[in-house]
Length: 288
Image 1 (cartoon, one colour):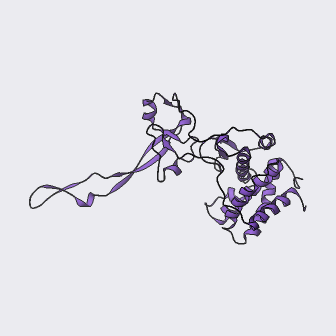
Image 2 (cartoon, rainbow, N blue to C red):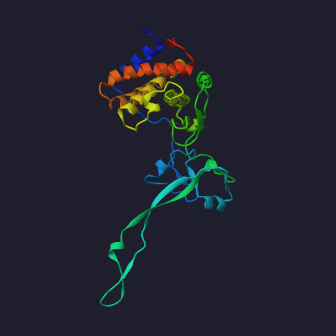
Image 3 (tube, helix red, strand yellow):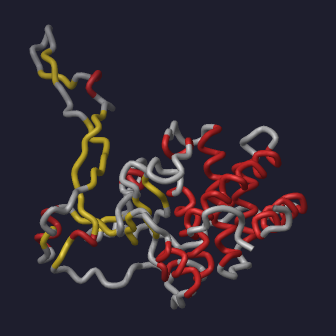
């Protein structure tokens, strides 16, 4: 049906893209993971290894004990890797009989690892407030209702620097509400992850989720369009209007990775309508 809310939102996003949009920005504050005792940030690949944790502050098992705390029963550790120099070897000089440094052993390193636990998995230690700017969060009732009414919805966990959907465990992870720039941006981000979750085999069985084949692929890029279009539709449904420019920026970024990007946006919008209908409990037709 033409002139439905879905059509209007899709046209508005396409118009924003045609006019030129500013680059997408992440709408929540983040803190790089760091060791709570030493204050040192984890570097290299470690922020990626620790990105699934619900708190950016970490301690080893022994550090937690030294600070008077305990790791909670059943808590899972996270791996931190580092490069350690190999022990310098010596060789005996055939002429003098002296032990000399083997130059071949110099400058060589071996990859090692140790395990850490995030603050949310440790008890008995006052970690204090998160070291990020936080804002008072005022819930939007209509947006909360959309989540509450989502039947057969995925599991939900809050905390950490990451907003994502894990298809393998059918779980959404979101940063704390208070670190978002505004409640509107929080719900827009949540709706995006909800959009992804509709692709689970137990729901719409969408290829980008049910048959995930790697980040950056054509299928993955298309799935990102579907999720963000879903977020835009749901935001409009609950009366959130000030996030559409950032949505358009996000959509433009992913659409540019696809050929015939405008056509792909329209095709993704049709899938996003199905996703929105599922979340809202609409059997057929659009949300007028």
